[in-house]
Image (cartoon, rainbow, N blue to C red; front, side, top):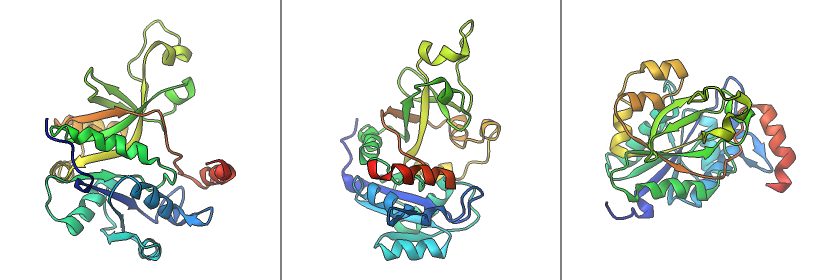
Length: 255
């Protein structure tokens, strides 16, 4: 096992797009006097020494520069946030194989620094290629919601499969108590990758399981990469729609 990595071995990148089917301009939405992208940036900076935003939109670049953040312009044709952060890392950092790149979702303005540090801790083991967070499923509604991705893990905590459907199927058990009879895990969508592994992932073509579930992490598993998972009890408030934003604003004094 290699020594624990220093904080400056980590770079956090926040992919941010202006165009969104469900919520155009989401990164610039006002949340209590600060834009969403500023809140994500500031929360991430509490855990990671270097933070940057990767975007394809001048309006987002202008906003990040306004609050003093680091920003890099990327292509508008990327298929995923993973591809966008890989381009940003190449432009700003070059080929630094020993750096760990953290992909922080741009729609979680209240992400907890402790969650990010939990992810960083995984790389105390020099053999870890990719890491992500999982949280125990607490209810039937959460388990059967296809928008909540579930993770199947092996006995060492490595991800076997990601699905929008509950796996495993519990034979002869009523569905409404599955979450009481088996320990299911929900995926928390923050990743960290060794920089050399990130570069390799972006070169992979779409895979059958990825296409079936519309989950790019299955492509990595299908190609033999190992995704380490770490448990967390907390979960950020992601904002996917204007309705989500209204709900967050109603809670703002208590967040």
